[in-house]
Length: 169
Image 1 (tube, rainbow, N blue to C red):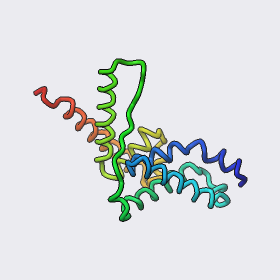
Image 2: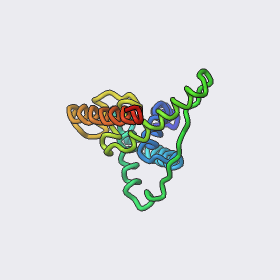
Image 3: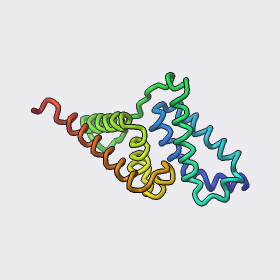
Image 4: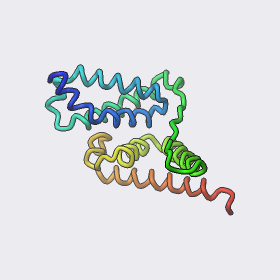
């Protein structure tokens, strides 16, 4: 596989790799490092991966495994929380603040989910993978993926309702 072919095959999903790494590692710096490391690994295996049916699914599986390994390592204690802010010029300041708060709450709730649910909700609701791709990445059957996704969504919904109803009772 030439460098051009490699880039054409991997560039379309580089942002998805980064977002999954960021969801799991939380730190922007750690996610950037992980993404770079993963693409170096993909480059080194370019001949092997050229015959794969879905290079993207392979890369996402590598990302998940790499990030989980990083979290288990001693360096995991050095990870820091870095927030990204939602910015839009089309809405009022109070609406922006409300949206930013809601986004931060949902991110926080997602990060509190069990690891498996966090990965599945990231892949399905953020990255918009279909169920077959998610099953391949997380190595679970479709029923288990759907159940985990349903539980994750229910947990987030319940916690979000509690947060928004706080003080109104």
